[in-house]
Length: 287
Image 1 (tube, rainbow, N blue to C red):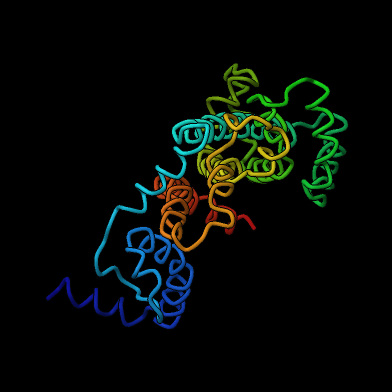
Image 2 (cartoon, rainbow, N blue to C red; image 1 turned 135 degrees about the vertical axis):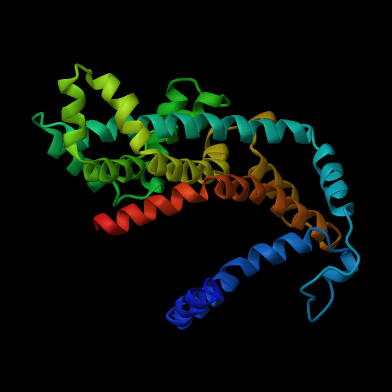
């Protein structure tokens, strides 16, 4: 009884209206993901039911088999598309996080002349869409002879002004006294960056990892611009090409393809969600 009474008093003081609103919003946001998941396991006759059912009566895996048959019918095996997407996304995420952190650190903590000017240029670059630089990027990549290579699908998207701005704002909020203490102990800037700055910024670059992965995994524009060979296509582009204009017969395979292309991003977010929440809470407190 002594434990239950304080717990009940705490529940009485909670803002149930806010919890109810957040629950409704969570259902609205999660409903498309739920429907996409169950549609991948519905037989074709259940997919064509009207009104649609929000549950699966006879789950099946035949759509995933149809997906493999449809992709294997092309000149390139399905495993090649998966490898391309995983390899490109992994390289882009690693390089993007390192580049953004290494650029943002001096922009946030250095007092060298010209730092503010460089940061203002990065902020100005945020106003331009990536479509504005599409033609210059193609001309540069083509001039360097990188068409149909992994370099073309990774290098142009590694340096992001938004990622640099995001990390700079987080580094700016970190106390400089910690860095000063490290310098007094004899640590150099490289040691400060790897042993103090990066561990403290783990929530921020974990959040950046999710954003970079989502952008790289779903990047169809780069694959369209810089690839001519079927063997260089990424999984989202290959699936879109195969199922564009497909009839009702491939409706279930398309649902399975949507689930497979979305699953990696969702899995990564599940593993890193605590870091994302910590980043948002830190930004809210410092804001």
